[in-house]
Image 1: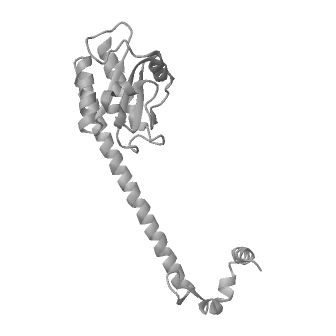
Image 2 (image 1 turned 180 degrees about the vertical axis):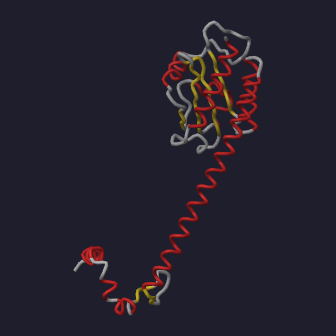
Image 3 (image 1 turned 60 degrees about the horizontal axis):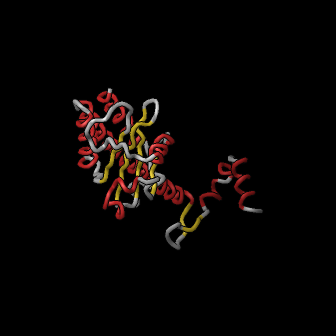
Length: 216
């Protein structure tokens, strides 16, 4: 008989254990962490303990993940409040740069805007943003993370570009794209392609709303 046949038989005949209780009590199996033999009941206890440890580990991971999300949510809330309190476009941009640098530890942040009919004297309003960069922003449905700078955006980071190893892009859109937020890091794992983008998406939505309110 194969092990599978024995397993299937016992599943189909649970009364076996009641009918052969004396035989069951004499059965011994190897200890999972040693050479000695133990009873089935002891083995079940060990299995339950191992399962309990695994569940405790998963619970710790969930708690840590929840605490990390709470911390990120609090930081995003502070950034949102700062942008809502801003009285002009310059204030919105200053709040964005400050909070990304101080709260989120993202020292390399570049924002480029090209809204129609608005040309405040700010470096972020760059009429020279290439057609490729604008097309890239228009193509984004969700934030995009990459190990390399997309299209010609590496030049936006100046001399620091050569040291940067991961990038995140968030398009700012109303009816169409009017801006692109680029974040970068020397750490290759900061914005790797599989990074979750939920909070980046919310960052883009908040920044878009704050800017549009002051651009119109």
